[in-house]
Image (cartoon, rainbow, N blue to C red; front, side):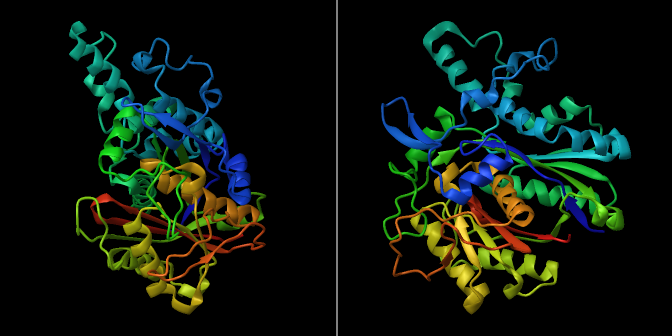
Amino acid sequence: MGVTLCAPGLVCCAGNNREEFFDAALRGDQGGIKPFVIPNNRSFPAGLVPQSALSFSDSFFGGSDWENLANSRLLRMTLAALEQIRPEVEDAISVYGPERVGVCAGSCDNSSEASFPAHQSYFSGAGFPASYKLAFQGASLIAEFIAAVFNIRGPCLTTAAACASGAEAVIKGAQLIESGICDAVIAGGADMVSQTVMLGFAALEAVSDEICNPFSRNRKGINLGEGAAFFVMRKNENAAEQAAGSEPHIALLGRGESADAHHLTAPRPDGGGAEAAMREALNMAGIAPSDVDYINLHGTGTPLNDSMEALAINAVFADNAPYVSSAKPITGHTLGAAGALELSLCWMSLAKGGLPVHCWDGQPDPEIPSLNFAAGGTAVFPKICMSNSFAFGGCNISLIIGREK
């Protein structure tokens, strides 16, 4: 049974919806990256969602169990993305029933935005605020929120695979459909830039004080970002009807996962884990490397990640060299949202044509294989795209989607 991905709903610093985001990616617009100041007065570039994108009615929150989270940026970003796909969600519920629709949501941070001020209050002697609850930091927060928004009564799952969480949510959604447990699934991820997260990555010395520069000899590390992206995934049971419709029919063709378990934060240096994930995705899709038109790179801008990813792509694709680019100089690294947000770029490339530009200083690293970076104005109408997510702990995921109409 095939699985179809409906058009994504999303919000990030580069756009308040999929059209704005894709336009920014085609132009290489890095204007959404802004300074973010942490408590020691150090400042780092970060991809921050504008408050205007989140300034909608809080009527859903009022009088509900979620009332104390009405000001949550994390849940407001989630809701902003979901509102864009509400017709698709409601159609799936109408066709299949709420018990046959599931939720798979990935995130890394959950709600440290609530914990940081709460603990500041506690350590100042004022105690925890009355509105603060430990449940706000539960891993299941986003998935439970989505289910509550739409009154979904099917499986409600949370994926926690570090920076591959959004991609893992898509895989789990596909498995729920293929197993016959669900007929449709809302799948994706959301994450935000909080003081806690920024301080943690700064302590790891992984954050660049400049806009990130993936695959350059001058790369210095990541920029953090925030956002949310979700798809409605449906079982592909009406191929003839879909072929006659106006919407593009884009399917999940293949997926690959590996766990190299090399180190808690550093990837396996030779790229073997990433290579295994890409090869598994190609094998599941039943295609050759030469069939892939574009790869959205994980491309964080850290020395180790970029090196191993270049080695892995060179090993898998060799002389076939598809176009590649990283979205992170445009969005920042959106952590648990990244896998779904970057898959959205692949979806838009398939639906609209054109490739996201790779933003960097054009200075290749002589110690790693060269890649075929997409430049501005690259006129390609891809049929098959791959999206890579390579996370802490050696959690590697590669997704392949293709246009079937």
